[in-house]
Amino acid sequence: MNAPHWRPGGRAELRKLLAQEWDVLIVGGGICGAGILLEASRRGLRALLVEQRDFAWGTSSRSSKLVHGGLRYLKEGQFALTRESVHEREALLREAAGLVEPQSFAFGDYAGRKPGRRTFLLGLAIYDRMAGQRSRHYYPREAFLQLAPHIDAEGLRGGMCYTDAKTDDARLVMRVLQEAQQYGGTAFNYLSVQGLLREGGSVRGAQLRDELDAGGETHTVQAKVVISATGAWADALRAQGGAARRLRPLRGSHLLLPAWRLPLAQAVSLMHPQDGRPVFAFPWEGVTLVGTTDLDHGEDLRHEAAITRAEVDYLMAALRLQFPQLDLCEDDIIATYAGVRPVIDSGQADPSKETREHALWLENGLLTVTGGKLTTFRVMALDALKQAKTLLPEWRDELRPQPIFAAVPAPRYQRGLPAGQARRLQGRYGAQAQALLDAAHPAELQTIPGTETLWAQLRWAARHEAVQHLDDLLLRRTRVGLLLRNGAAAILPRVKAICQPELGWSEQRWRTEESAYLALCKAHYSLPPEQENKRQYG
Image (cartoon, rainbow, N blue to C red; front, side):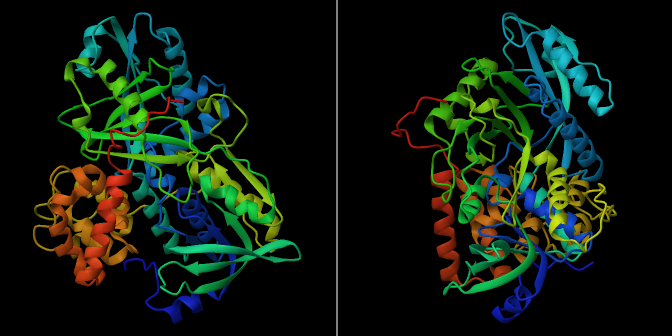
């Protein structure tokens, strides 16, 4: 099967493509927009997705990487959201194996700490029932310490274990977009909406600007339905029609540490002693990921989010409490990242109390879908298309859930491929996994040291996955910029040797991209400067 093509080769072809009349124009290239493109395309609609930056640039590459049912939402009484999330988690585990994988969580039962054993086990029993499972949840002290070594043993009575799932969020977006393309969907990155087109007061398209064109060429796109799937950025597009603000952007920040410094087989979760919020640490892509915070994000959404000094202190305090014998310090941190969650503003004083349910608003022909979670992107997509049907009177579809991904054969064994990589590539690249292996040069089937990423994935991304800038390649198509110190600066010479010919970049272009990328990593994916003012957490 041929690899998908993301962008046409020249301006004339791009103009011709965009000049078509589309059934659906989707604004936003995160997981929500990608899911809508897939569900619309597989049902015969002519669907176009545009993203002003890169695919998954926003929240969908900076999430907590968890595909979960939302155990903590049970405490808030959000049973419907939890049930829906559990159902979608199970579907992704079945249909996206190798990309969405089970992750066991361990939660210590300490004398005097909340929540108590009885409350937690009741929640887990409900959680299991929703998933149609029954598992052993409680382990006595010694058995629990074997499951979760290195944790604080003082006051430990035992512990609870349960299973959720994890993923590479940016690769999940790319896999959904790839699947949509197989059904005829079209997706372009670096096309921004400059204004909405209206006919009789109702939205009927958009004026787009090509952000890769030095002159900023604009294109008029006509569509019967325009769907805004821009997440935390949705209020900006809604404001063009005079709609009032309805979102409360919340920042979640994370740390990445070497697996040898914080070695975990189970994920370990605890309630932070400062505010009772859950904090977790789990193995991810060869490192250990720690998160998350939950703060109002008052910064300009046009700029990338970054962790603050107060958030670093907050997460490090949780690690020192839970793993006192490891003597963890800031020097252990490989990288940081922060994402902005699209949460509906209900006026709660505590940001963590805001609902994570999604919302849809149809306002003068502009359909906005926002809120929600990574796990429930298919539900959000189907709900959006149910609303869109009112604007597509000739379209008939029952919109019943279908398998998220078509079944694909595992790639053929290739000598030298590390154990487990065939399943991993099948999950991330679907029908393209074999082509990726076939395109690899000698020695590119080895993993990049310190990661689970093959060198061959860099070549494939540069050749086939609409990489326009170096951060697209190293922060989203692959995650090596997060997994290695200083944005993977030490391996950039080999990255250049592999990718520069594939991208067709001159020496000057490479130097410009490298300089901009390293500056980005220092400003937004590293520890904040020591002299940063410490704002009170929360």
